[in-house]
Amino acid sequence: MDSIVVTGGAPLSGKIAIAGAKNAALTLMPATLLSEEPLTLTNAPRLSDIATMTALLQSLGVEVTSMQDGKVQVLSSHAMTSTTADYEIVRKMRASNLVLGPLLARHHQAVVSLPGGCAIGARPMDIHVTALEAMGAEIELKDGYLHAKASGGLKGAKVPLRFASVGATENVLMAATLAKGTTVIENAAREPEIVDLAHCLRRMGAQIEGEGTSTITIQGVDRLGAATHPVVTDRIELGTYMLAPVFAGGEVECLGGRLDLVGSFVEKLDAAGVDVTETPDGLKVKRRTDRAMAVDVTTEVFPGFPTDLQAQMMAMLCTADGTSVLEEKIFENRFMHAPELIRMGADIEVHGGIATVRGVDRLKGAPVMATDLRASVSLILAGLAAEGETTVSRIYHLDRGYEHIEEKLSGVGAKIERISS
Ligand code: EPZ
Image 1 (cartoon, protein in one colour):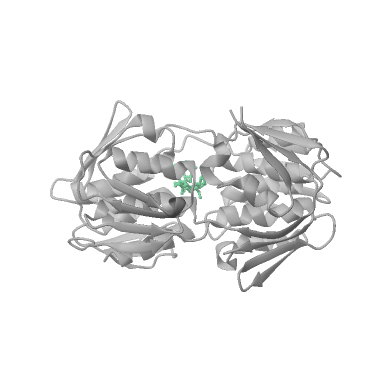
Image 2 (image 1 turned 120 degrees about the horizontal axis):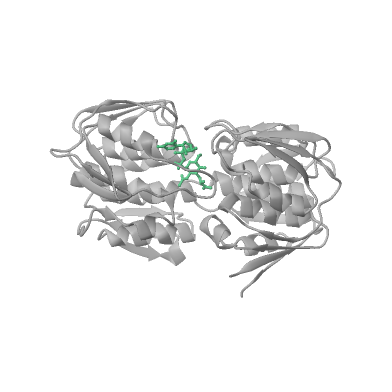
């Protein structure tokens, strides 16, 4: 298994191009199932999760053509061969469950394996199931698979979500585009990836209003057509690289960065003593002094502080001036980066969903292990500032969500290399 070695202490300077959003692409790709016409996605990220979603869609009979080194994906589901999403693929990536809504909407049936738990939590699908049942689907759990059918098609309905689940909002939004009648999603997730999906569906001919707010109204149509859609910038990759100069010193410009994608994150950076400046090409980031200040962070649904940036923020706060309290309210077990940061000399105490971080002067490089996607990148960032070498193993987690991370960081002066073994 590959590992990445980072040698700390090199201040950063230069530009990092931010890719298209993994979590947008993973819901835009299944949208092809809603139409027999082709869907072309541009600005697509080159990630192993995209390859997994491609394999899943191809197992259903979707044609996926990758162009321009994977930045353009052309998908067509005019010749479907199956409506079963197999456990072997679904277990690798929870987002596979996003084929459920589209398959039900257009094919009136679907068999989708439950994804099973993952490192950060149980991640059930009750909100997805309840919502689709409200639209007339009959869904039964058998042998670890959801067996869903909607004879005569789905019907528009009022769909209140008990929690503003991103995936459930995406499944219902896609399903509702072809349902008979009007669907109103209440307490919908407001993430930019939902807005991006709505923009793409509208290009395909869907009638949608309210995306980005807690209430989304969809008027079902008989069919959807072809579309070409640019994948929105990845706000989590953006936030991750915005933190890099805070760890290592120097200044970095994140090309493609937009303030509206990272509002609450930038507020926290400002409180921690970090300047973020808008430029014609993106966002420029530089810490005001040679040590960030402690801040408290609570993860919330958008537009609150994103859970997917919690690990990276915790790593930065390990050497901030003062004590920070981080509360993780979205997932039940998302502090696995803490023990690895403690191996590097961090002072962190975890009690349930609360982590207290007392800033130390400097971390020390050490061999550490990645456990989930965002935890692994927090260790890479910590290595940028640590004394000596940090070796991060199990970096297959990283490759799921960060394209060419060693090139992007070494391109701005970081001492980082991938060791294949
Ligand atoms: C999406 O996951 C993202 N993944 C996650 O990013 C992100 O952390 C999460 O949203 C929250 O923002 C993709 O978009 C592919 P949820 P999703 O449904 O849709 C509970 C990353 O690192 N829940 O909003 O699965 C669930 O257990 C990944 O890129 C239920 O209880 O998130 C969790 O505690 C990690 N029942 C909370 O809600 C359900 O039916 C948030 O889940 C659904 C969810």
